[in-house]
Every structure is written in C-alpha cells, then in structure tokens.
Amino acid sequence: MAKDYMIIRGGRLLDLETRAAPFQDILVADGRIIQVGNPGLDAPATAEAIDAAGLLRHPGLVKAHTHGMFNLCKGMSDRSSLELLLVNAPAMIAQHSAEMKHLSTYLGAVEMLMKGCTACCDLTFGFPFATIDEMVAIGQAYIDAGMRAVVAPSLADRSFYKAIPGLLDHIPSSLKAATAQHGSSSPHDGIRMMGQLLRDWPHERDRVSLGIAPVIPLHCSDGLMTDCADLAREYAVVLHSHVAESKVQAVSSLTAYGNTMTAHLDSLGLLGPNFTVAHGVWLDDDDMRRLADNGSSVAHCAGSNMRLGCGIADARRMIELGVNLAIGTDSANCSDNQNMYEAMRYASMASNVRGPDYRRWLSSPEIIRAATQGGAYALGFGDIGKIAPGYRADIVFIDLNSTNWMPLNDPANQLVLAEDGTGPKHVIVNGAFVVKDRRHRSCNLEDLSVRVEAARERLMELTLPARNVGAALEKIVGDFCIGLARRHYHIERYAAPLGQ
Image (cartoon, rainbow, N blue to C red; front, side, top):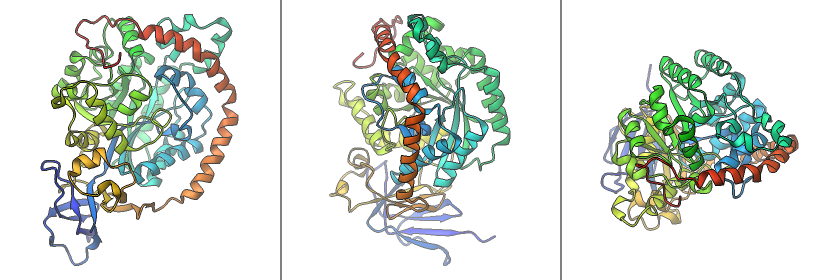
C-alpha cells in the first residue's frame, strides 16, 4: 500500500538543547515523522507540501491532568478551597447526561487543540461513577475533536464526608441527610464496570485510551485501591490519583494511615511506571524518592494549586530526586481555562517564588520537556512529545508574526513566558490538520456556543437544589478544614510548601 507523505518546509523548529529555532524540514509518512533535516530535504514527488514560512514548530503539548466534565462549569467558583470544591462538585456535575458529558468534553478538547495541546489525561466523574455508555460518549468527544486522550473513570467507595476524619461528626443533624447525596458505592460495582470497559472499549486505543483513577486515596478503601492496581497491571493501562494535594489531605492521611498518602500507596503496591500523582503539593523527600524509585510521575498543576490555596509543589526537588515531571491545568472549575501555555508560565513563576536561589528555579527547557515528553510518559503514549523520527506527527505551528514573538530572542523562554495561547496558527495530530488558520476544522464555534449555553441553562435549573445544599454546608466544612489545615504536620522530615 502506498504511503501518504507530507513534507513541511520553510519553518523554524524549536531546539531545547541550544535554545534556538533553526530552519528545518520535516518529512511525515502515514502520520509518523520519518526524517528531520536541513532545508531542501528530499521527499517523494507525491508528498503533500506544507509551507511553514514564518512559523515556529514545537511538539504538541501533552496535558497530564484535567477533568473534561467541568468545562461547562468554568467561572462558577470564587475563593474556593479544594475541599469546598468537593462539597459543590455534585451541584456541578451530578445532573450531567451522557450527551452533556460528551458536549463538555468536546468543548474542552476544542479549546485545548486551538491552544496547542494535542493529548491529555482526563479523569472523568459520575455519581457514583461514570457508566460505560457515558465513558464511551466521553471517548467519542475526543475522537470527534481529533485529539489524543487517556480517559480514566474516577472510582471511590467512601464519600468526601467520611474521607476526612471527624468531618461527618461535625455536620449538624439537620444537614446529615444532605451529605448522603454525596454517597458512596460498592467497590465491586466500580471494578466490575471498569473491567467490562477495559474488555469492550470501542475506540482506537492509540488515539483514545483508558486509564483507571482511584480518585483520592482517602476516598477509597484499600481493597478498591489494590483492585484498581490489579486491573491496571492486567490490561497494561495507567493509574492516576489525586495525592497530597492539600494540607487537609496531608493531615488526614496521618490520622487515617499513620503515614503519608504516598507511603501508604507504596505499601499497597500501587506505585510503578504507570502511576501518576496528581498535584503532589505535600510530598516530602521520602515520598518523592518512593515515586522516583518506582518510575512514577507527578502531574504538576501550579495554577490550580494556587487558585485553591493548596500550596506550591516543589517541582525542582522532584526532578532532583528522579521523579518524572509532567504539567497539567486541572479542570475548568479551578483553573478556568484549558491553556497549557498558561500552565507552563504558572509552573515557571511558582518555582521562582519558592526561594531566592535562582539556580533552583525551573528553566524554560525543563518546563517544556515536562509539558511534552514528561506528559507523554505519564499518559503511556511512547511515541508522542517530540519532533523526531519515529514519533507521531503531533505538531503545533506558532505564528511568528504574533506580537508575543516580536522580536524572536530565546524561543524556549518565549514559549513559556510570552506565548498566551493566541499564537498557534495550525495544529496537526497524527499528520492531519485539526486546526488550520486558527479555526478548528470540524467545529463551528458559533453552533457550539448555542449548544453550550442551552446546556448551561438546563444545568442551572437541574442543579439548584444541590447548589442550595452546597451553600448551606460551605461555612461548616470550610471552618472545619481551616482548623484541620492549621495543625502541625507531625512528620519531622517534612518541609512544608511555601505559604503553609
């Protein structure tokens, strides 16, 4: 069978080693990069010629952590801690139909692609968990948008109110019934659903794959956690969990486990090359060494961590100790957009404010590697994240006529510190254009806006009772968690994140 060739000529190619952007040609065949070379690179006469003059090419950004279901909820929260976000989560998403979940996920995928992100890890939600039909619809949303993804259903068998020691006892009896709406489920039901999903997944797995997400260790019994790990090993898929995200989680872990979350997960056998810690703000050196020794990753979501007041993760120390660092935005209800350029800039700035020793600040090339190669490793996609022979042709074309790039000085610095998501002119995934001349090729944004607004209005109507419950619980939960977070973290080796 004849190969489908593409030759991309005339543009600059980001080189992190030299912090330069030399002119290079890229030869692609059947969606995979065959050769990268100097201008004038030989190509078959049948190759489609793409003119990249005036453009800078970089690998598609790989987002290591988000929640696609919350894209209909952007801008809904202000001055919200992580724990208050969890109180209000049912009000935001419990009424989502499979159609709404598809729409919300598709909206986020279109935004990500138009802002240079070509792959993501999406932890999905449902009450008690997303159904098989809903998961298939979510996967289809990424197929429809033309994006790669790992979709991982969030599993739990313990409610938020039972997960935080002492919290349920603190809830007035008049509101106890309302907390039951957050409920819990049988661990067997979630594992049974996950097993069937892994067996019968209808989508092409090198484009939209499955992962498993025991959502937060405190929300999961040990049995559920080990069952998730067993399934992940059986089907060779990734595991992803919110670990040590907030001070409340860190303190609660000592009460629940007598140890850190990471140490407890290690004792259960969850850590490995397929395991990703989301956030990791409250990891200590021992935690990081455990992750590094097992080849595990951290999805660093600096913007969300600051937005929710969780603290600032020590990404430099993670790298020093050998943890694979990746970058995420988190969801639209706590990062407000899905802009990986902004996430990279946040990662840079957060690193700087941890201390005055500039030699320990993350460099721009380190951040870009985390947002590409680091994310690819965390997602389990071994052939994305680089523009090099053998890798998939997931490529972003930045318009150098954008004011962010005038003049062109250090392209690595400018990608992290100057680019704001307005620069991508074209984006290709697997050698095919999904964004061309700043327009998503298969999405009519005007029509999408009408559908999204109709869904928002419907959700506002459906979620009113749950939002009223959340409002009634907010001060009670907020005060309890503030008190918990003010406790000393009784592990002597622990060094608290800045501001805590």
